[in-house]
Image (cartoon, rainbow, N blue to C red; front, top):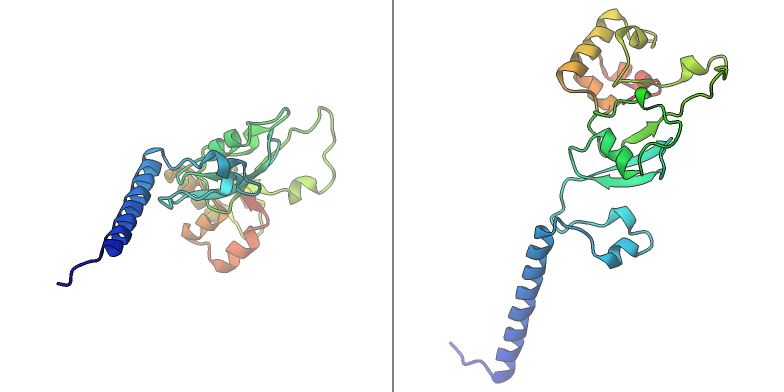
Amino acid sequence: MPELSRSQVVVYGAVAIALLLVGARAIRAEGDGGTPSAAAATAPGAGDFSLKPSGGPDVVVDVAGAVRRPGVYRLPAGARVVDAISRAGGAGAGAALEGINRAARLADGQQVVVPAQAPAGAAVPAGAAEDAPISLGSASAEQLETIDGIGPVTASKIVEYRDAHGGLASVDQLDRVPGIGPATMESLRGRLQP
């Protein structure tokens, strides 16, 4: 084996030290839970979209409606709708939380809309109630039957599936319910929300 020159030893030593520092930094970041640095948190556009070194399976959701800070948020996989509402500053004054399933698991790319309560004595415009999306998390079988393409048997299967699996995180999960095919799924997307 040829003998290394002094400059080669210095270069190899510097490379080894650099690799050790990078490895130590990665290990320390995993121990911190992958929290982003203060610079990343304050950088314009970085906000909630900083990447974790471990590349965990996070979900990104859009929280809108009657919340204090509507926006797009990154949450850990397995998070629930209630976690997204909390991340958005909590429910705003006048939020109708009974209109949303706060226990539903979040899916990547999902929009969580927290409905606002109608003012006391306000009349509902004609056609508004029938055009409003129905919540999969809280709808009864009778409410589901009002949607074209869902009959009593399919509605009861949806409710049974929802109850057996702890809720539905997205409309896409309906394809696991017997009797709902791709054509029915497409017609339901506009009428349902998680």
